[in-house]
Picture (tube, rainbow, N blue to C red):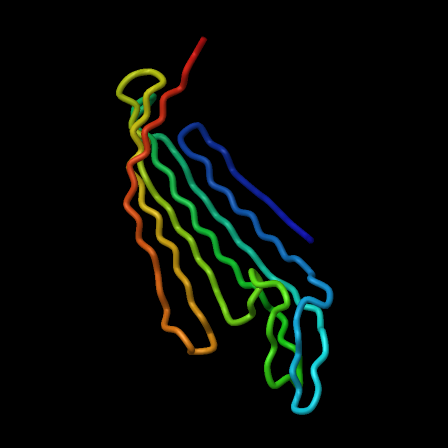
Amino acid sequence: MVKAFAAYEAPAFTIGAEVYTQYLQNSLLSKKTVSADTVSGRNLGLSAFVRGKLWKDKLDFFARMDRFNPYVNPVKGSASVTSLLSPYDPANRNGFMTAGLDYSPVKNVHFIPNIWYCRYKELSGRRNKDYDLIYRLTFFYKFEG
């Protein structure tokens, strides 16, 4: 696995990104016209985020986006390629986004309305694109002893 992370932090906001690629040896089954053989594959992930202050000690914001491609290097001459590891199916692409506000009416109490958006896409055409859209309200209290 090779991974890189970078971020910039200022008094009012922070922005950052992470990217990685992972080599999976003999993780795919390549079906040619007559025979089948195991082949290696590589995946790619990307995450980016931003967070900041809108009103000092009262209201903050955040957003994050994740993308995952389980298979970025197709095998030449293969009729089809399937994964031997179910999370790394080459026919699927996944995406995730979240955004929200963090409201703190008093010290150590937070109300965090936020949205989650999960996107699923299958390249083979057996299923249509699909997504989940989730509206959430998170309550957070920090205990101090």
